[in-house]
Image (cartoon, rainbow over all chains, first blue to last red; front, side):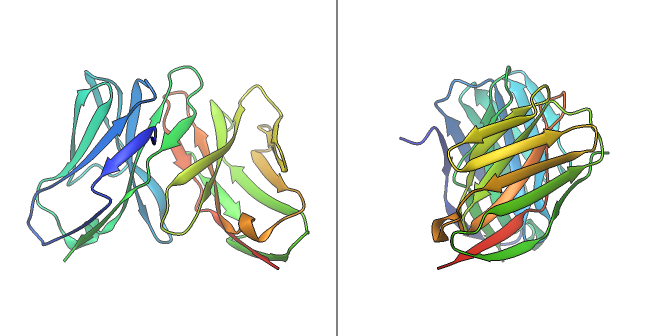
Length: 112
Length: 111
């Protein structure tokens, strides 16, 4: 089984809809991250969490919110999706000591 | 603000040739540097992690070096194979555990 899983893997939605992307990990890591990837722009950090009670904004947090429900679960919400949020979204985890990051398979989100 | 640059953006080599991928960064106050591989439409696979106190790391045909004083890291892939075709990304971790990515180098290895 994969160490970092993301659901759904693909999602097509309409402008204005609320969307939740979920991430689960079995690596026992404290730290979890959400990124988005756009062609030509690379990966950019949306939010990150160093433990269950810690949530921090990343480079591009506007239009997004997150919830850290447990050490192993970190979800990303788009309260009112817009077309420029169409992208590939990745969840990642890392341990506190080495900070080596491990990525999930990604969620391809299309907002029409 | 840390800036991470990968040059070239794309590279095509014949099978068997050695690959040299470059990553440069502007702020030497890094915690570690990580090289990733990404296949089209897929997730990122960690290849090598170099801690800031290390100069290089090796894994099989892969070798990555780190020179913080000059703000450079190089990923060497020996005896390239068509299966090495992918996009290679470098990323730097700051002391807060946040990653800053380069835009990647797209590699094609032709048989």
